[in-house]
Every structure is written in C-alpha cells, then in structure tokens.
Amino acid sequence: MTLIAEYRHNPVMLTECRQALALKPGETCCDCTLGGAGHSLEFACDLQSAGTLIGIDRDAAALKVATQRINERFSGLHFIALHGNFADMDELLLLARVPGIDGFLFDLGVSSPQLDFPERGFSYAQSAPLDMRMDPGQQTLTAAEIINTTNEAGLTWILQTYGEERWAARIAAFIVKARAQKPLTTTDELTELIKAAIPASARRTGGNPAKRTFQALRIAVNGETDALQKGLEAALRWLNPGGRIAVISYHSLEDRIVKEAFAQAAIGCVCPPEAPMCVCGQEPVLSKIARKPLVPTSAEVEANPRSRSAKLRWAVKR
Image 1 (cartoon, rainbow, N blue to C red):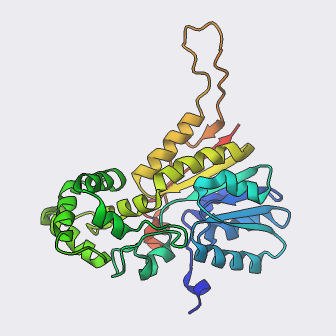
Image 2 (cartoon, rainbow, N blue to C red):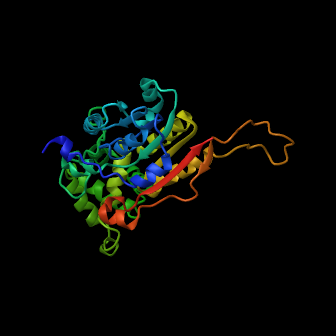
Image 3 (cartoon, rainbow, N blue to C red):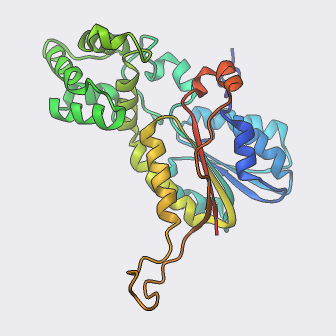
C-alpha cells in the first residue's frame, strides 16, 4: 500500500469547522496542522481557485501526502505547503508572502496516521521504540530519553502537568526502579509498567491506563503547550479584521490554554474603574468568541471514536 493511501485523515468536526471559519471565495486560509489534508480539502472548495490555502505541518510525510492530494484535486488553487512548527508562525508566514489570513485552523494533538504507524512510538496499543517525535528529522529528544534520564520528581511533574495523571508519583517511582535494572526502550515495556503501577481498582474505568502517561510524554517531547501558546498569539496577529480562528483540542490542558488565550485577547481597557478616562489604550483583539466549545455529534463519535474528546472553540477578530 502506498504512503498516500495509508496516510488517511478523518477530519474531526468538519462541518462545524467550515461553519466557524465561514471561508469565502478568494480568501486566504491557513491550516496550521495540515495532517492528511482532511480539513483543507474541504476548505479548498470554499476558497475556490481565486483563494489561497496555506498548510503547515511538522511531519514531513504528512506534508508530502497532503500536498499531493490537494494539487491533484485543486490544480488551480494557490496552495503553499510549509514544513515547520506553528510555534514559528511568524517566520513561516513571512515565507508565504501573504499580507494577512482570513481563517486559521488548529487541529491539535497526534494524528491518526501517527498513531497507526507503530514505528513512530505514539501508540500504547502496539510495540514500538519509545520515540514520539512529530518531526524526527529536526528533533533529537525522544520519549525514551525522557523516561531514562529525568529524575523521579521531574517525571512526576511531567505526568501530572501534561497528563493530569492521578498516579503520577507512583508511575514515576516504578519507572525509576525499573530503569535501574535496564533502560526502558519500547512502548509495550512502558505500558506494562504503568499497568503494574496503577492499582487494579483504578484500572477498571477510564480506558487504557497508559493513555495519560503517553499523552504527557508526547507533549513533553514535542513542546506542545509552549508551541500552542506561541502559535495562538501569532495567529491573532496575522488575522485580518473580521477573520476567524478555530481550534480543536482533545484534552483539558489544551482546551484551557485556548480558552484563556481567547479570553485575554477579548479584554479591552484595563484602567482602574475610578480613572476619569482611559490611558492604557488597550483595545480588544477579538470581537466575538463562542460562548461554549462545540463537541462532536453522537453520530460522528460512533463513526470516528477518536473524535470523542474533541472540543472546538472559535473566535472572530475585530
């Protein structure tokens, strides 16, 4: 099977994303997490040949497949593929030579193909090296290095902060004890250790007990929280007046960052209430924010179980 056939992309909340961005023919859209182009193929329909579509991805394989798919279906569209991290949005969009963006999409987390290719080390369901790098060609830090070199307190912090893992301290202690005998190098070794660390009563609900630890390690390896904050800040700068931004998150840590970034950008004057006039000059960047996040329909969750935890937030620039 060819890479393009394997690198499928079931776009999460596609209808909701198109409605949130409301792209028009001739506008410019930036898909900051291009993946297999599941969302962007539909955005291209909205932009039509007069529009510009920009796709950013850290994963070179995803970028290659998405570019081929888009060019085959929309040969007249101005499509710009950019290999990089959306944390470097300013530099990337300067390369694209566009004056501004009318719509941004961030579809966060790990993509289905990254989970499905065992050698990437993202999945706890298959045996593979503990890697988890989204851009192996540019990144050197792996999950194995974090697991085998970080002290117990540091591991506990990573699992608590990025995985919101209740048993973080216990898992960290088990890791440190196990690696003293030999380094942990594979996903199945780590999964079995996590199962041993978490009490049986706590393993009966909530899905695979390794889920939160693997999430935490992936975020740490790829610097995802810092990248998200930087990417959102840059996107709000590049949005044209009336432009829209939509973000799909898959766990509460990501959703909280997005919610707070939007709320901060909607704040206007911060002068004390007793001040006779505004002297701060601060004006809100966003004119409208979705009051609550949208979630997938039950039909979508049934068709694509990986969409279950998705939350979509969107906002409009003044």
